[in-house]
Image 1 (cartoon, rainbow, N blue to C red):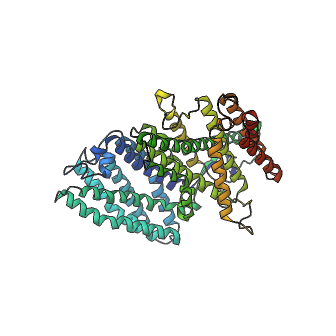
Image 2: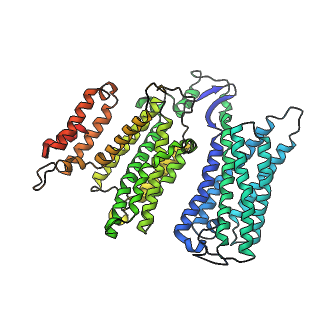
Image 3: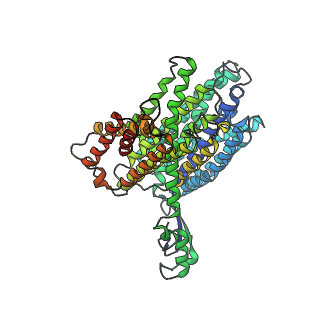
Length: 561
């Protein structure tokens, strides 16, 4: 980020106002999602049990039992709630500023101050029922919860009344407000059924409505993403007041620190360190994508072997077409906007190696593959009119595929983060998971180019066909998946049977990886790779691979690669 000067000093950093509600939503949602996942995995039968009944009468945990009764889910939730508190308080103060901005000079700011005070009390009350659990002191926990719910009424009503007249934002707010207050009546009903009439199973239904309050609450505050689009935080060094570029060596030093073209970045061709980190994060997420995509059929294959027949789990193969859900505009836009968070959720496929039950492990892998496909699909759709961003996205995914093949070569044809691997078989699942979390967090924190970026690809050309594009893109993905997710596939296809006289996986696989890298490098020569001659050469190489055996067939496969 190049540093700039203004009349008040040197601007060291600019942070978009939307980062506050974004951080609030991510940390808040992570607190409850992680607690729920860890709780169900580690203490499922304990957290669904209550003073009236246990499993199977009660089969869904309440918020209080999930976040307050057991280690480590209780502590994970408390850590993320602590991280949420900072953005929460800033969110409240920004809303106060947004409210008083529209108050006339001679008008009263009393309601805005009341709303700010109410929201601060509400934030503290949230800490009360999170950090003082029902196991610690049931009465204090309930009192804090009641205060929180009572403060929610003026918070919701006041926010809707003082919000800028944005029809879209107001529509979302009213929807989530109706959902929140509408859930209170059935929630109280089932609580009475549980606590007074002591009916087994009632607490499970109560828990559903309790969780819906959390979702509606977070979603209501997330709407601030729309209202804060015009806000920006600036860190200004007022000691540099009045100084301009080139007028001060100190200013030049600061610009070098910030990553201007005069700094260290120029020595490596103008590439800034943050851009290198972003590029590496995208490549690693591409590696995660190919790792999970190839692990799904691997897991499905296990079940016919185990059951000695059709098991029904083969249906999870349809996860490969979940990207079709991106036809829903609201889903596609939401994933594109929060793609870092969805990347983080998709890592459940990597974490699945911890699940002992094979069926549950397969379900986790399927969920990870689906989320990853949706994220990459939404990303490419959002970049379809920005030539540079689209090319960068394809490049990182292709480099992730090459990295996937290189890693498999190093691990004897196994991927160390596949769910079938573990510490005893040479797996590096935990390292892969940690790197994936860091890459996803980096995507969350980076500032993506906005919609104001000029379109470099003309849209709605005459004769466009989404069907032809879908067939071509799907065929290309199928080709990559079936032919190039394992560097030994080409060499194995060229075998003619016993004795094995064809190319071996080593060094044949290394030659395939080198050909993939060369092809990716040459892809920048657009006039070449989009010509009919290039296509003809590739098709001829595939024909040679198909109709010939041994080294000749392998050579055709290399040309095709």
